Amino acid sequence: MAKSRDIYRRMRSVDNTRKITRTMEMVSTAKLRQAQGRVIRARPYSQHLSEMIARLSTPELAELQPLLRQPDEIERAAVVLLTSNRGLCGAFNANLIRAAQAQIKELEEGGAEVEFHVYGNKGISYFRFRGVEMALARNDLSDRPEPTDAIDAIDDIAARFEAGDLDAAYIVYAEFRNMVSTPPATRQILPVSVGEKTGPQPFYILRPSAEEILSQLLPLYVTNSVFSAMLETAAAEQAARRTAMKSATDNAEEFLNKLRRTYNRARQAEITNQIAEIIGGADALEG
Image (cartoon, rainbow, N blue to C red; front, side, top):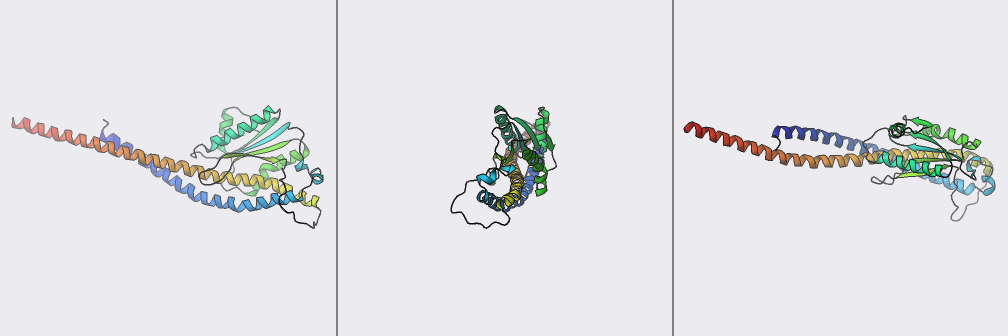
């Protein structure tokens, strides 16, 4: 059996780790509440914007809008991957990387040339280590994304799509469903997919024309799609880190309890041995 002194040192090490993971869990919980609030506030705007485009769009107008252009065949596509800059969030980044690899494989098997854009240190490190070529690698996206971040990410891609240099663009991100469910998701951002019109349609008097309104709404919709993905990924990262740190804290607490029992048994054995040595020494002196 290990000496009680060695067990005590290990207990202190595990306890220090438990304190760190507990603190990180509390920090992630606070950040998660803020990130979740931003996601919830952004969703109605995205929904109404999508509904408005669907109501305004017609097959005739779709032919006049470059962002609605449906290619006959995808020959060149861009894939944007969002990962975190920091770890300690379980399988969060691994799941996103696998989803991006699956999307790239699907496009390449269809004969498309893929241009890869990666955000976040974890994704960049993974693909750089494996020698995967990246058209863009950035790690300056914070856990509080701003609309300007989405503009920087998509403006060049959208311009090249309008010019015909790209046939499609996809974004791989983490979908924030709730505190414990943050699965990876892939969304096609270009060409813009217009949803089906459902229910009674209102009658609009449009000033200016529907074409001019769509020409303003479509770039806004594309940017907002990327911004929404950034917000959801930021919230999902904090949720994944909170879950991972809570699990680590619980495991450390369980291990610490086992070490306490082992320490008590070792200490008891040492005391028993000391008592036996004292009694043996006393008997030797009397003899």
